[in-house]
Length: 316
Image (cartoon, rainbow, N blue to C red; front, side, top):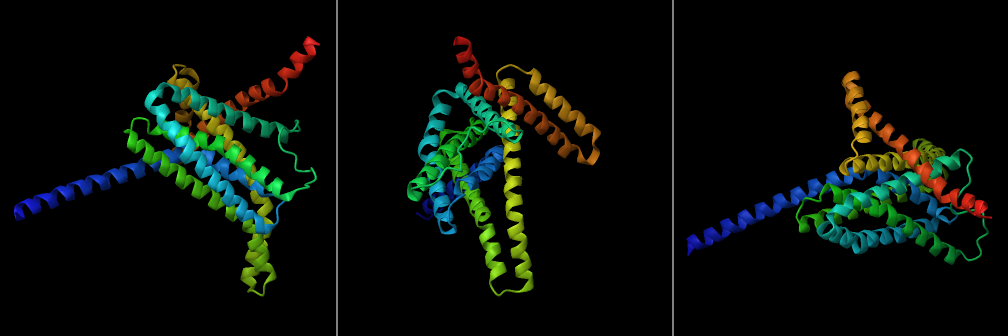
């Protein structure tokens, strides 16, 4: 009897160790997959603060919370089952769909660049008079959740491509972990960003120490600059990630030239840069990816906005 109990405990110990190792593997794979999606995450964090403009400070955090809940629903209820079904039954479709998502990111980034250079704006106009604030709030939340769906789909697709060889259960756990962690990280950062000026104002106005007032003044002055930096970084991230996805996907589909050329430049910069070779090599590859993303995105923007008008004029 004792021998049987010892054997049972030993079996339980082995199972527990295997489960712990499996959890560690899932965590490591989730971290790797999340890192690959970093560019889209940056864009998500850069885009979301714009959806809480024109609201009173007391409504900012509730709106962010509603968007965050919508984001979790997007990832866990819709995208996760779809991604698992796709990887199980149509694994060959992952790369083309990922490239389509990358092309969308290129288009979004190129549109922002075109707008900055004086082109026509093709988005929401904030100058319209608001007659029903509750309806306006719901429209903003719905718009943010729709935008999040596209970005979340790209995040989940990138993560799925990294773990496509894992067993189905591990894939599901990894994608769920990536979705939850990224949502918490993105909307936690967004909440801090949109409340930064309120925190600064509170430190300046209350009877606080000189150091606290300096910190508050710094936060107030930093807020508009931070939003500009986030906008620029978000645009660059879209172009870099989108272009990189196109390069990698084209290589997977048999078109090796563009990807091999970019990697050749990367390795040449690495070898010529000494101690900074790794950083500068990666930066060169990211720059080439962004340039490719900008060119492809500009072509898509032209086709979507100019070509129908030209075809209609020619027909007339």
